[in-house]
Image 1 (cartoon, rainbow, N blue to C red):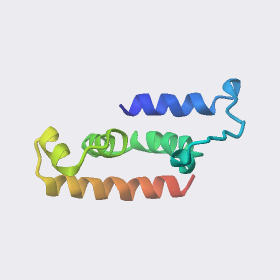
Image 2: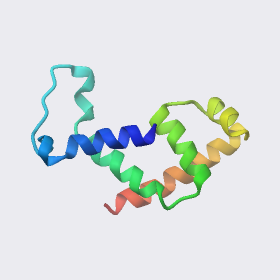
Image 3: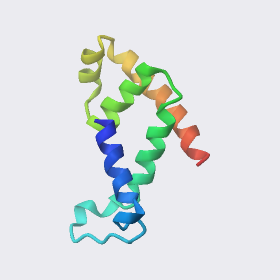
Image 4: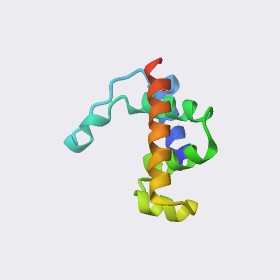
Length: 100
C-alpha cells in the first residue's frame, strides 16, 4: 500500500505533469491535503533506515489505516508491542523529517 501512495505522491510532484502548479479544489474536506506529497515521500525515504517490523507497523497505521488491535493480530504480537513499535517509529521519523 505504501508504494501506491508514494507513486501517487511522486506523480503529483512531477514537473511534466504540472507538479509546480498550485492545485485548487472545490471540496472543503480535502482542503488540508495540499503539500502532503512531500511528507509521504519523506516518510518513505526515512523508512528505509529502520527495523523492518517498525516499517510494517508504520505501513499498517499510516498508509493502510489499521488500528492497533488489527496490526497486533496481523503481526502476531501484543497490542503493547505495536504501541511501543509505533512510538519508536514515530520518534525516528520525527527526527528524520525534522532535518529535511
